[in-house]
Image (tube, rainbow, N blue to C red; front, side, top):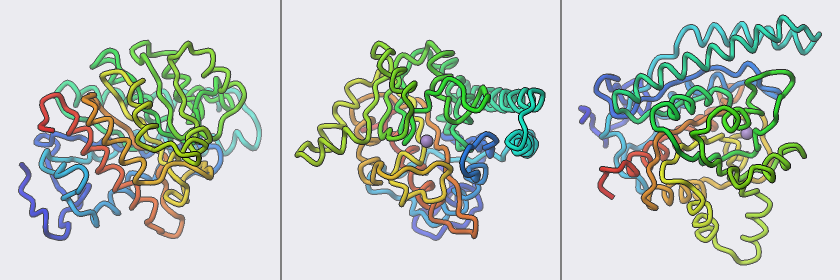
Length: 338
Ligand SMILES: [Mn+2]
């Protein structure tokens, strides 16, 4: 157990004020400060740092998830190549939006592919050492390498995908790895992902709606409008959560786009949409997954973006959600006391 006083104010500089050495941590957090293809409003590249800074005000003892800090939580340093790739790619994307250029587009796609490979290699290495690994984006495309690594390590699993968007576009602005097509890439390239369960979706195109319909049950989407219609006419959140859990396989990877929450909780995220989950509803859902006996094998938290003037609210919500994600994943481990 790390040498920490959970009742004292945060004293370390690491995530949640912990300065756990990665070699001694049960939980490894991989930051991916990269958001090259964000279409509307960039900023998610600064997400990991915003979450780290805001995390210092969080109490380490949590009513819902107990004491996840006891497992040891270590935030890795961002890979310098990811940072430099992001700077180059963002510049190229800005030029592309001025005038299309096939060579520049190919270069951006190559940079994104290299970031994926770096993330996949890093996550795989820690999974082989038996750690719980969480990836912190970055835009949603940064989750792909993490999901690939979990597929390589665990074999078959399902994804619980909380998001305002379906992320099932075949190709978005010519980018092969866009935040808007990440789950399409996952479904196309990773047969290990036996089911994609989407929650909170409220912004999608006709092609994506057809993609869901034609997936023969591999993609199950709990649309925000449908859930609200039921809640407004007397259904309970617990009943809807039970239906979500029922379609999840035994092993679950959670991909959490912060914009799945009410945008009041993430006002600076790249593509906010009205509606979405409240914080307590999201926490109830996460806890229910762990309580159901399913094994949460890993997770990502993406699209958290700080305000331009140092507004820390998005980071604050992101840090609290991150602590819950770590907590439920630890609770769900096959050998964890329930
Ligand atoms: Mn989204």
